[in-house]
Length: 208
Image (cartoon, rainbow, N blue to C red; front, side, top):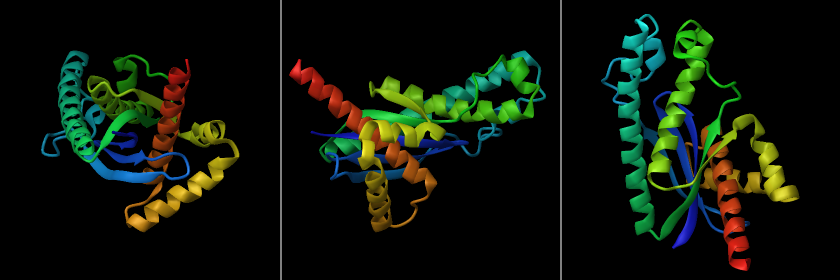
């Protein structure tokens, strides 16, 4: 099986996913998809914290727990199917990366619901956690990378080759056709870094 890695850039209710395989210098995009992790017919599913903003704290907690269970289930279902499909094509997932915001750790739910800014932050973390939970359930090592630190991480991982790597990923995406926006570009770069780090770790283990 050829190792592959996934990068995900998360939005409200969905994530832009790119899977990368291949050795450094010969990377290929083996999957590019939009993973929806909400029931769009369910009231409040896309903005769960906005939905519970005016509720009593106990009721808000119950609604959020329900939203979380549904998103976790849908994320696990989608990623399980993707993993099976990739294995059928000869790829084994060695890791995943989720792009993170630069926000500070969240306070209590009561404080979150009292701040519109924190509500937006909490919703981003809510859906990232659903993806993280699914990867962990599948036994796929998952790394969180703050999006603003992505280029620094690329420099540390690839050194001077980082700039050429970004150009190569951009050309790979253009050859596939749209969509190839910031969502896919950043997810792809994160995936390549995880793939490289996984290969390095495997090489060190073999050498030891």
